[in-house]
Length: 56
Ligand SMILES: [Zn+2]
Image (cartoon, rainbow, N blue to C red; front, side):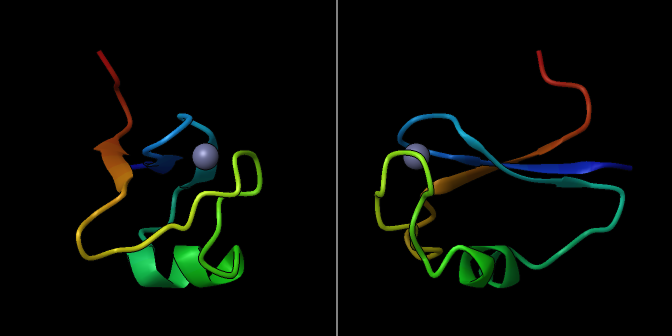
């Protein structure tokens, strides 16, 4: 099942892939900041949206 991770602030797609990744690893790839809106991405409290493939 594909995983998608979005920036909570601007909805930018941070990660999409078949492989389930721990959110902190994804945040590390962006140095903890959204590349689009430069918001700090923190995992606790959760500032990203993690969804299964089919978004409503
Ligand atoms: Zn953002």
